[in-house]
Amino acid sequence: MDGNGRWAQARGLPRTEGHRRGVEALRRTVRAASDLGVSYLTIFSFSTENWRRPAMEVSFLLALFKRFVRNDLAELHASNVRVRMIGDRDGTPADIRELIDQAEALTRDNTALTLIIAFNYGARDEIMRATNRLLADRLAKGDDTPVTAAEISACLDTGDFPDPDLVIRTSGEVRLSNFLMWQAAYSELVFTPVLWPDFDHGALESAIAEFRMRDRRFGGLAQKSV
Ligand code: IPE
Ligand code: MG
Image 1 (cartoon, protein in one colour):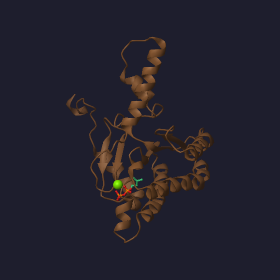
Image 2: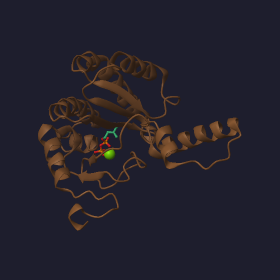
Image 3: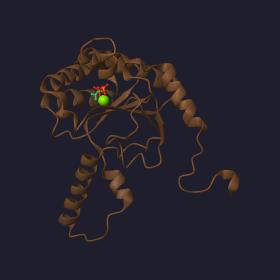
């Protein structure tokens, strides 16, 4: 969800206004994903690296996140959305962790869209935590067998979820920025110049249309060549 700062700057507004409008884009996008029949939507909300921003901006982002969960949880639940978090829970401020726990508990049996909130998330951090869990488990059992890719996948924060088919990066940046680096190995990447506060149903629909044009081979050969 990139481009909030630039959206605000272009209008002579403070960066915080861009973040505020970004929450509206998030609401629109969750609704659009539900309408378009998406099963899993992962939003990169706050990264393990975002703590490097000025303290004022970090505290604004944390407050905005809390307000979003408090204000929108009832509607998400009513829309049959299941909320889940990925990221370093232990390093997340306790009040935010509690809100996320509540959101997950309330919506656990919902069956429409799964909204995965990547909060205090970084792919390298996630892979490191998974590795240490596997290592501790191996050591406890005196097990010296090699770790498999399937075990790593299952041990990641996303262990319950399928790999993403499509990763959308807004604001014209062309990189993954530590997002789902293991899981996105064969994801289709769509880069759009749209700044996140302007993202909407149409932008999601056109990213999905672009995805549908792609020929996915997963390292194999195209169907017609076989
Ligand atoms: C994304 O917008 C919001 C977060 C990373 C939390 P930015 O704040 O990165 O916006 P730009 O990149 O400065 O435009
Ligand atoms: Mg940015």
